[in-house]
View 1: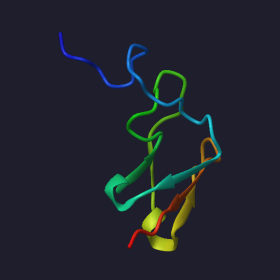
View 2: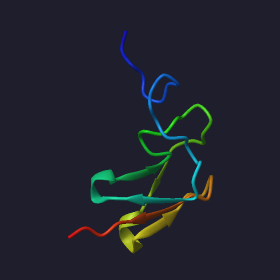
View 3: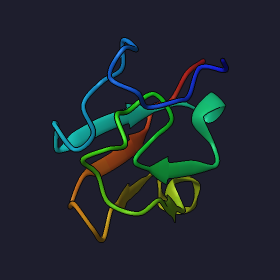
Length: 71
């Protein structure tokens, strides 16, 4: 049986548990909830244009994502 993403037996972070998330270029395109978050208690996936201004706010849960700058 294939492992499904977002199931309770995985070591994932809770969706919408924080209000501010740092993201990297590797995380683009950015969606909320992000891959690696539990999905069972979250909202529909929405893509956020964080690369345009360096930050974006989710219209569903209000989480703020900001793009980290790496040298």
